[in-house]
Amino acid sequence: MLSIFIIGNGRMATHLIQAFQETDVEIAGFYARNSNHAERISAEYKTSFYSDLSSIPKDCDVYFLAVSDSAISELSEQLKVQGLVVHCSGMAPIHSIKNQTHSGVFWPIQSFNINRTLEYAKIPICIEANSEENLRILEALADRISKKVMLITEAQRQYLHLSAVFVNNFTNHLFILAQDILHAQGLTFDLLLPLIQETIERVKEVDPRLVQTGPASRNDATTLVQHEKLLEEQVQLLNVYKMLSKSILEYTQKG
Image (cartoon, rainbow, N blue to C red):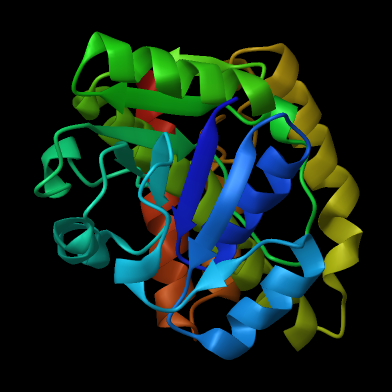
């Protein structure tokens, strides 16, 4: 049986605990500086927590650094363990893990929220390691919670992270801007939900390039001008609209 220890008690750490609790993997515990939050997680998932990094179990197979990118190097330097130490970042290089013989990356392509339970089997997991043996360990762990495990390079992972920002963070920001426009007119965002859902369903089935519609994609200058007039007193929104419309038009014309 594989054993793991999780360093952190935020969203990533909590979801790792949730995911592996449904498997035969032994969760030896987790480390947290914030004892109040940690006590809640410990009670909810019946998992031990440690507030002293020097006292954590030393004999686990894998140690997850479920922390911010800026904390990876510092915490990994403090770890005195023999097992495989991995971070869960989409961007941090594997060598950001310091003073460890065995190192790797275990990055689920997902945005995590503590208040949501996810279908982990559907979440792709990207793995890297500094040896074939360590890669096999991570593959065995990932296979226990996901049906899509990918062995990728550092550059591929970083470009995947960049792409994820486009489809998740940028898209959500556009949702926020659309909501602001609607609220100013006494309308609600839920009116757009069927359209959003239909777009998502389409891109599941066909190339996103075949789904693109709208005035910019068909070079409908009249509608573009009318939209810009509606936004003429909101300079920031107008700039976003012009930039995205220009990008869509140029991409469409490029073929």
